Amino acid sequence: MSFSPRVIALLGFGEAGSAIARGLCIEGGWRGSHDEGGPKPGDNAPRRVIAIDTALDKDARGTALGKAARGLDVAIEGHYTAALGEADLVISAVQGEFARDAAAAAAPLLKKGAHFLDLCTITGKMSDEDRAEIETGGGRYVDVAVMGGFFKQGIKAPMLVAGEEAEAAVAWMNANGFDAKLLGLKPGSASSVKMLRSVLVKGIEALGVEALVTAQRQGILEEVLGCLGDADEATLGGFIGMLVQTHIVHAHRRWEEMGLVARTLRETGVDPLMTEAIERSHRRSVDAHIAPADGQVPSLEEALKILSEKVIRGV
Image 1 (cartoon, rainbow, N blue to C red):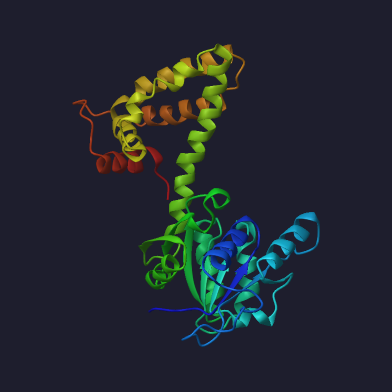
Image 2 (cartoon, one colour; image 1 turned 60 degrees about the horizontal axis):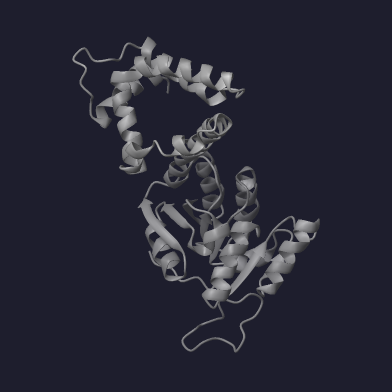
């Protein structure tokens, strides 16, 4: 189902909301409280952007976001009002911990059939909870995961979109300055992809802190950064997949090595927080006796099956 919203409401006017507003108003020609020059030929009504942020004018940050909104001619309110019912499209960009509160507050005010794009950083289960609130209010929920940063990329921050209305949403978003990619029909899946990506990216970040501080203290930072040629030659996804495959065969040797790595960090005065967690994780695989008798590395699919059934387990 296609849609062509005339009024967009932004829930939250922080970094994400203000970046989207700038993209729509400055680059896309949308307006806020009024449309200079009146409706364009063929338009039924002016295209407007409104915003709601409960922090409005409550402190220095709230004053700043109000000033930013008004500078873009975006009408902004500090609470949820009937004006939200004018919106054909609602974009929720509040902090994840407040996502359900925002959805619950917005739901009774929504225009029937209004699309609700949930950009909040939330889990798949939290996405289901948000969707229930919106659909109860007659809205159409769309799960959106922001995979980049608004600070540098603005409205072009890459997004994954999922849900029954996702295809139409992606078409509209890409036609209006966003960088959106259709993930599928299952709402919550985009949020889950982002969460699992964070396991990898933030995990690498934490490992980088631990390893590079140690390297800098030992005076070998450039050498450590320069010894990652095998990773440089592969895609990051391919490299991680390879590690998981070979984990089935080499978990024992790698577990023993991590014990020595932890000792190396301690000798340098670095608490091996991440290293010890890796050591415990590898020991779990060792204790599960998953190493194949023939020493052959399985496919990624088979490796994940072994790990799921014999190591990770649980539901």
